[in-house]
Image (cartoon, rainbow, N blue to C red):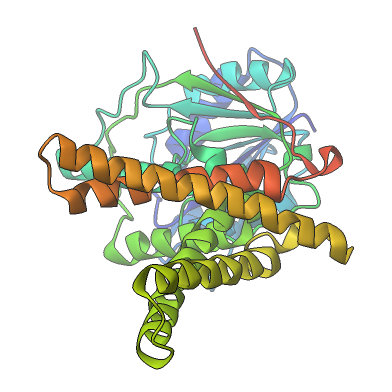
Length: 373
């Protein structure tokens, strides 16, 4: 089997026959072997229509789930039950035009591992959405691209229309929450090339949209799960948490030195900063970068001077921003805040690159994202 087309459905009786006919029309000239696999969670008579289609067309297959857990799990079920070397996932509501299938198939044959029809590259359009849905879609994409490194260069990372080689998901545990299965594939899949082609998102002709407040909440939960499951993504957030805890340690030690031990304020400040720096190093070594923990003790200890130097540069960056703000007449606290943001980014990137540098064998190859021209 060359191609499997997976279509999750929920109460789409008006559309399943239409989309089947359009898919068969566009694939007939290609001459490839294919299957159209519906994973259905419907509560109307959609299964009856699917049964009729499967009897009339050997290419059509379906699975009706009595207690389905959403679109994402439906697609995963389709991954398990289909046989094609290439897989294309699309919705049943005809907002994903089947006429793109031949182009997607050709690009996959040419070696592209993940192909995403995008509404947001030149030539694409999301005109099938009203202004509110466009706002929700933009917000979701922005949150995803900011939160997850593998999605930052992809313009339509939350779409439901995509193609991939089966090898991308073989041996990969997929556990999506809600609808956005593409994010799950992008974060956990095994691939090096992503290609985007433009398409126009069509207005729905029949049926009703499945977007709800619950699905929006599921999306946020899914983002959190993906960030936590990806060391590259969660590391920065853990680093910030350790830094925030270090601020509390700094202030507590400062108070202890000033009030209990009656140490001079400058010496107390330096001592508190040193204790906080040591605290941050130990937590980062054992928690933030635990995957890169050095088993040989003396090599672990050698990381501390690097951490101190990098942190010292960060302190200098913060001080420079505060001084600059004061010099140009801006509130010094705004300058200090800007400095903290820049210094935090510097500290994280520098420590990630040098202090807890991964060995060459552990570095992931760069993923190449291209767009149709």
